[in-house]
Length: 154
Image (cartoon, rainbow, N blue to C red; front, top):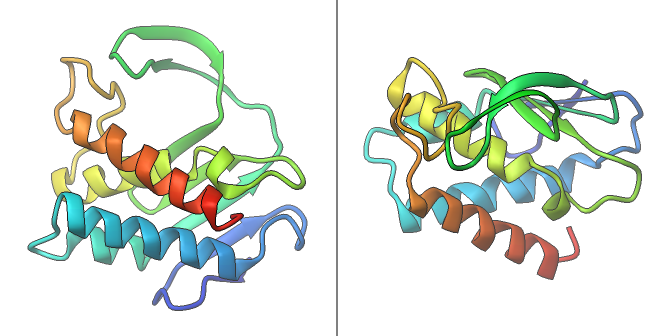
């Protein structure tokens, strides 16, 4: 476990210490929050608090589960690129030398943000009709943050 700098109680769980340095992950999480504040807002500080107490696990493990696609349609047993496991824990599949902008990190942070607001779930069906929370603006935010991270070489 490695402490994420500038975030009160956020940690990285990595199988290899050189998988992701803590500083770029901190930059990604802070950039995510700045964009969240700019595009969506956080009037009660729920998203801020969630990001400040998050466990981010990076691994190259293969994980499968029944999930929903971005349009809300169920997909039985699919290989995962990331998963919001709880309100305080995300798993992100990563490989060596993969940029953060190429992982599902930002996508999973949206699930955590939604979970922090709803208190019940992170809207696992995305734009589907079973759960509420995910909107087009969340998908735009993911694209914007990932583009910025790629431009920074992260």
